[in-house]
Length: 169
Length: 337
Ligand code: SF4
Ligand code: SF4
Ligand code: FES
View 1 (cartoon, each protein chain N blue to C red):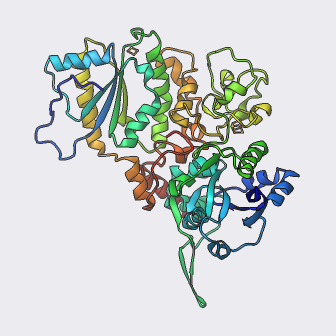
View 2 (view 1 turned 90 degrees about the vertical axis):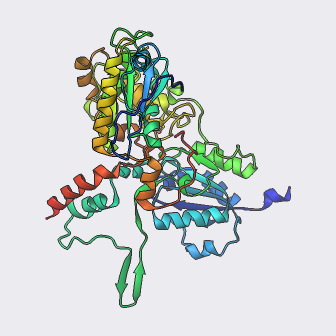
View 3 (view 1 turned 60 degrees about the vertical axis):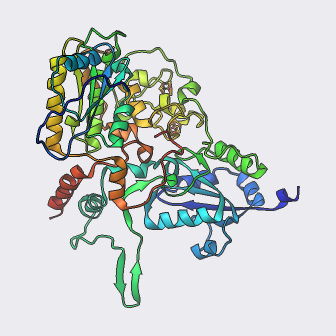
């Protein structure tokens, strides 16, 4: 994980709780776009952490679930605009997954708005900043989500053994 | 080797399960007699009349193997899992429910209150005007009776006790059970934590023709009779073969039914449901939302489809309570009143 984008606190005097949002950006477009936002000194919220992957097509839904599992309040996936993917078809895969994945999240009781897919080109620093600020606002309105470990603890108060075992999760 | 002459002590237990795993043991047919020769059964509630106190009376670690099927849904099951773990040298999670939560874990989309409201209130076959719900304590003239606590969530066995081996399947097929029995009897046990099944994806054993065709419509099994020669996924029928462990003998595919994933995720799958969602969704033909959305809407109930047997082993595991509390309970109450 590289973070060469300067994170700037966006909400002076904002709420005590600050949403944690994981942004997973493709190297060729969205990451460059976020970088440009940094260079242009556009403000975006400090609670947004950017993870760089080579292509949005690499973002398995499991990555997003893992972020929610750990207690992210939202996840933003960024890729190149349709037709612009460095690997030709990666972002189409991302779109296909998203169309099913957001329904899955709702079945898990996680609001659709906590997960967002955006096409952000290398030149769209302003779009990145707008999307990031919008998303944080929406998540602030929803409130914190909490980690799965917390949710399980609240469910029955059992002290569960460390994860692992038969499956992979 | 005098040790091998000594009869093995075997315990079999069912927790939140349907009984299918018990039948699977009986499906060993005549081999069950060999098992009876090799082993003394110390607990088998479905077949033999033992009491929990008989097990409590045994020395810790004196049971050689416990085959534990079913998930953990209530406090009694947790208690017995802990008891049997203490008494047993080898604890085996037997079947999909013990390994991954199985079908019972699908109830993790709801909490206790909404489950009770539905089961004891709004199901069409229920008449319960007094709205009687299960209680953990019941005063009677003879004294207070205590019943197990029904949990909000379903857990897999290794959430609550240390598990040595996993035998997946709904239920595990007899040949795998036999492989496990032989390994135990001969003392040639695999490394701790091993899953007694294939290592690769089920697709490797599937003989259906694969052409990497794109899907223009998804269909459910009751909507179509699939071509028995062709890959089901390519016919738009969700088949969990690409992300599910091999080892069942492709028994569903042989019956022209898709794999539902009862053998759990392959070692490479990042997460069973997420990996299958990805495998299925990316089959859709199209490049824009207008084309793709109607195709992908054909995947109804993604959670129930992709986590049919593995919800208790998933990354999210239970529905976020903040949302569940309101909606379903209210629905239950309105319908009940
Ligand atoms: S997806 Fe199913 S039908 Fe297709 S090859 Fe794999 S196991 Fe066979
Ligand atoms: S085909 Fe799939 S669902 Fe059927 S027995 Fe095999 S692993 Fe289980
Ligand atoms: S490289 Fe940007 S989406 Fe594929």
